[in-house]
Image (cartoon, rainbow, N blue to C red):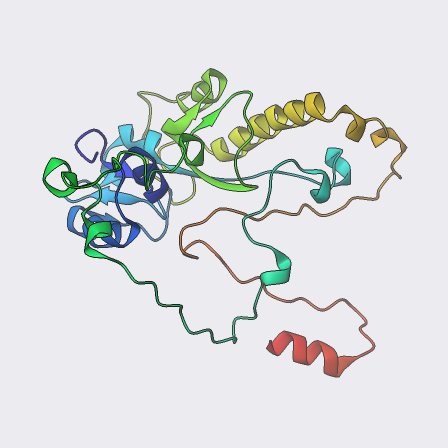
Length: 260
């Protein structure tokens, strides 16, 4: 896979080969290094390749896309036909300590995906046992993402209009920036706007009743967008800073919540 292209997300790897997750955790660090920040954050980059030095690496940049929902978009979070990976009922505070549940991994499981030498004695082929669906990393027009928050590589946005936005500055890339990489400024925003419009059209066609009363909403009243979903082992999850409202009557409560 890293000979085909030098940068991969872990979900994309899981969708292309069938390897036990515990085995994959051992294999990836032998082949690639993990980017923590920048346009290629949360991605695995082949050893010896620096995407910051190659303008053609912009197609491998990551896009943090979150489905927009709220009163101003015409549908509430509960109306969304796309589920959130995490439920607020299962959320625990950062100070909560949980002991990991031990999972017994057999030698047979670790041999899955090794090829004919490792799976010769297996009754069931390992070609799809651990594979994820293609939709977990590829965005296609007319199809909803599996989760409300997705991390796409630009080359996996399989829509012609989106690719035109990405390649607007082909041949004229001059500087790789921390925010936009090799793309033009606000390219990510333009992509999110176009993708959100496509998703809204899909939801409108599948659930037209949701948009029948959108004109009756009060002017100036907006509901904040609820966004949550896919990440990789909590690597992209960030804690939201608590901001007490102005003129709070219970100072002790705000201090406790701020501490938590």
